[in-house]
Length: 518
Image (cartoon, rainbow, N blue to C red; front, side, top):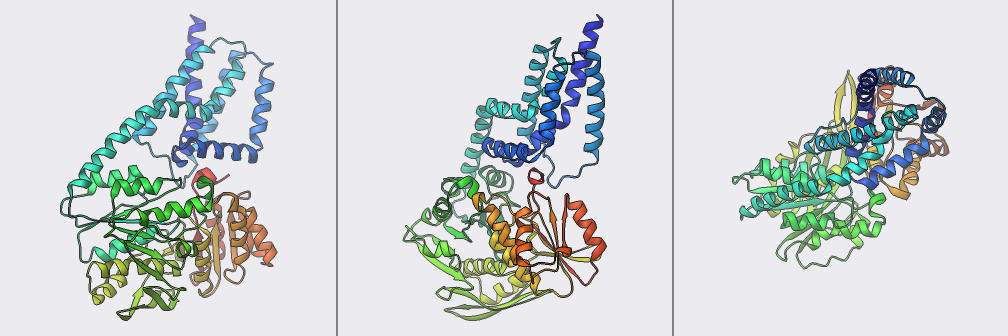
């Protein structure tokens, strides 16, 4: 009887102790978009960087010489108290979202855990097994995902087919597809803001640019009264855009940019170019393709489609719509748009060359949908700030430019150009850029090297992640005393509040998911 009670206490304590490590594993797996390869790559990289993992392995080896149930139970009590206390103080940039899929993973993991625990119960190496059990869900989540794959595919296919039926039932709906390595979300928001002045328009919210995100938008929000559907299309693997084009069937397609973003998952720049441009090539013959001719990869690409193509740009002169005479201030931007119809003056509260480029795409669509120039000018002036994309905001009396969403080399460069024109002290807080494959260190080095004369104080978040930026700063001759390296965003804000005043400007450049803060 005593042994049964002891075993029950042990099993309960072990399951409780596994909660926080399992939650962390699920969190990272979710941030890896439930893609096993991305998750495994993160796991490998973290193990390489984290010296504590080697200490833990050594501890497991040493435990082979200790065989005591009571020692194990005391250890579990102390471990669980420590982990829950630590977790209660932790603040996440992007917390774990308990979706239906995550709940299914939790149940599957729990079943696997209980089976393994019962198999190893009363083993003489009980402490060793316990130490392994506390971290085994970091790997077992891969097994759980594989077991659940048929279920997930069945659920996914049901919702996808339902969304297709709804979309196909709206025969007069004008569908606009937007893709690009960067700028697609900003362009989508800008286009929606302009078009909604004249039309009943629906856009995919936030960064809902995957098949399931688009499906959810269609099923939950698309109504027969809508005249236009503005759909953001994301891609980090070959055939993602091809699939989404076949799914949505847009008659208007926009490619905002092409760059090395997601090079790690695509494998080559050529694959990225072909994938993004496939949106234009999948358009119907009477469709409309709108492309950013400032982008060298778009400009050089030979489009295999005879549909109407409209080119826009700022630096490039050989375009149909060009922004000229750009001026920035803390209040926003002023610029002119030169077209074959004439030259028109615009004002917007948005900052940055790339935002003006995105506005050009919105202007083109508006004209193609027969909106008058005066109405477009008024609509552009009313475009709200786009969240986390050079968004000007005041926090605790200080002026911030929030460009925290998914930084990329070109966007980061444009952010620095905006900062160069700001008065007084200029701060930048950044953890650097990710998902750039073999080009990542080089891009971050260039980013750091470019900061000189654009900002005055640099605060880097994460010593390992920002090492190339620090090297770039050092090589550029940036004042070492004005470079700070901290472990968390909270520490970075603490420094800002100590050093900045209301006349200064603080740029928040990128905000990495917790998966990358190692």
